[in-house]
Image 1 (tube, rainbow, N blue to C red):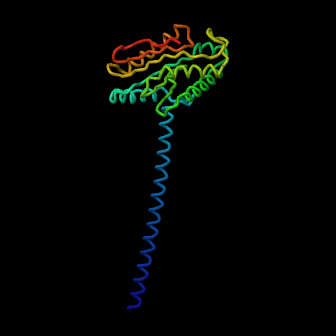
Image 2: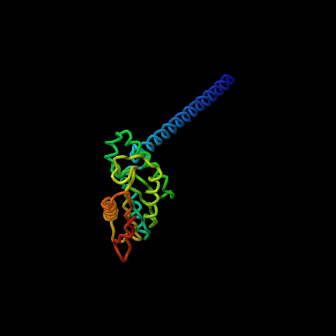
Image 3: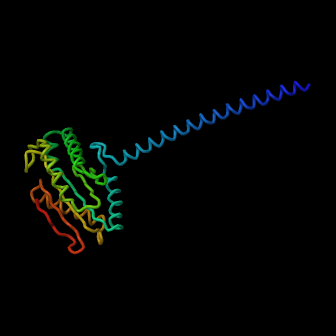
Length: 229
């Protein structure tokens, strides 16, 4: 009968519409679930990436992160003809500090020093990292004011006044700093820049510690010791 056909057609259309609506809602729910999982995965990957580049004790950047950033900024300085400065900082007589006060106190000292040195850096592009046991590296792109920043870092440690009875230079924790400031990195390599800063740090230690040694590099005079303080 025609009316039965009509009813049957309407029912089929209704069921088809309902089924399509159910499928659409299900697909949307699946897509939302996939989006949530992707967001969680991306967040987990970001956390993992941060962990691989963060020193687990002090919370600042680690050696891997520092090396990558140094490579990036050195290439930029070479490409754009910009200056760059590198500081190597070593806590004086830190082994004696650990032996006297214990390793937990040593860890607290490292963390406090790292935090305060990081606060000394004013520009977003500046980076500090823990690159060794009691050694820190500071990279200052597009500036030759490495010596100024080094003196500020030294002053910060003096204000902290962390007791260090086992030190041969001062009754408080001090740092020695080697600085290289390059007007240009022409004819330089990352290794030579780092070695120059390391040589300046060696001179700071040899000169009695608790001091800054700074070397400037320019096109005319490759290496000149410019500051003894």
